[in-house]
Amino acid sequence: MNEEKAIGMVTWDIANMFNIPDVGIIKENFPAELIGFNGRPLHLDSFIQIVTSGTRVECYPQQP
Image (cartoon, rainbow, N blue to C red; front, side, top):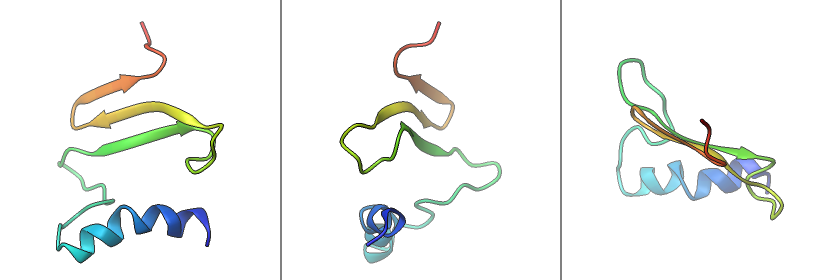
């Protein structure tokens, strides 16, 4: 299984199963949620670099 399919199984596939609309979709004029990784998300040596939710942005390590 490739990484895209594995990530899909724990995000938009579950959202579709429970009829939760718009998971994994970025739409104009709506808040977006995004997690950015330093490296490949399914590899043990990668880590979360940035998290956004609507207008809130968290960076790791913290940015000035």
